[in-house]
Length: 256
Image 1 (cartoon, rainbow, N blue to C red):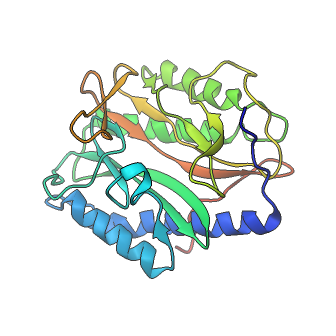
Image 2: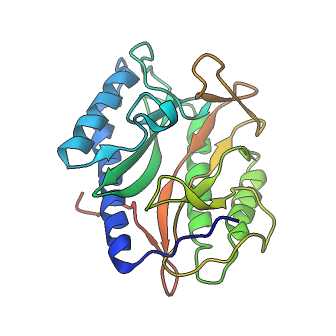
């Protein structure tokens, strides 16, 4: 089993700065999320913002991925590729996922956006998904099991009538883009490794309106969609295990 990296104070500070930049990028891009805008334009704005702050987009060129962000609309679960042909329209919901590399350290975060007036069904899915993330974060405390993150997320999502995507998960992050451990969003209680101070990882539940399964577009090899064409939503933060609990590294400061 791959070893989980315990970060030093210096590394944690570097990861914190990168995570804050990723979060500020998501705040910055909100002004451009409007009807008639292409996801290609959003991606260009994201890359410009990240580079202007001395960082680079981690996704660009990663395993051949062609863009600086992932932008996933409606039934796309994750890894949606920005395109000049994909134009935002009224009622769309979308996840924008940004990972920055700043001074060699990775910060990873995503959030949901809405275009115009969205349906009550879509709004409820978004709110439930954000609450799932918050429930998972509350499980982060030294000596707790990683499986308890997925246990509480899955229990809440099911109670609300939704399903949890099991084919994609959270992951260690900071020194590398993807590290141990794997952070499942549907898991047995008290399963998996234990949390230790200095661990950094993402929690990023993907919650589906319908069935939990996904399929990847054969044409691009990246875009993952729901099997039943129903809506999906996702929120993501990079989290640090502290001596007494957690710190959300990718949380935007209030003044921003």
